Length: 223
Image (cartoon, rainbow, N blue to C red; front, side, top):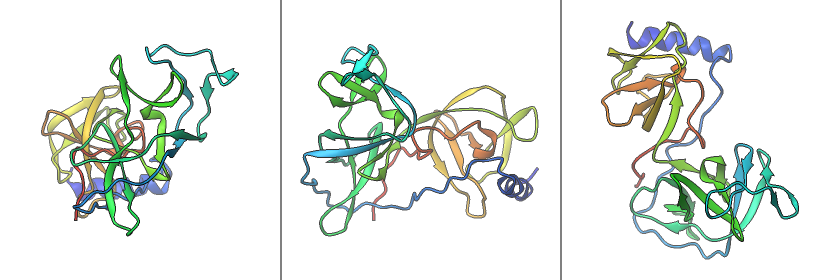
């Protein structure tokens, strides 16, 4: 099956609501001269219910006198600042300086037992993957995990970067680590690159977009 046929099927599925609506702006580029924003606090928005942990990665029972579970869409204001970067981080974002120029930056995080956390208070942390926005800008990631859910057949076909099938399939339920995404020139949905391979998989064949936002890229954008 060629790309165009699959695109028609995808377009139909989108119109039927099979694939969640998702149209982030990946074209946001960065200036070549990063500057630090003068700030003492940042605002976070959660994309998922989030437990609060201590600096050892142990889940807390209570946080600020309440059950240590923050609900999806909760907004937090925490101490810290977005700092400029020149190399991609595990989690990063883009910000605008006072002149309106865009730059890549990151809110420093802590890695605890293989997971990444933002500090939200004294000995209190939440997982970065549960954050959707920092200062109203989407949080991006250099890699994420997806679960295969074939749309048409029993197995999902891998593709090349142009969306054409190659001789490789993935079984339903397979977990894949992805580290980039593209939209083919005449495509209707995104394709994610399977880390460490030459394979790509269409968004139509995955259970959900990789968190935090489906924004997966292992390189920074500049102009």
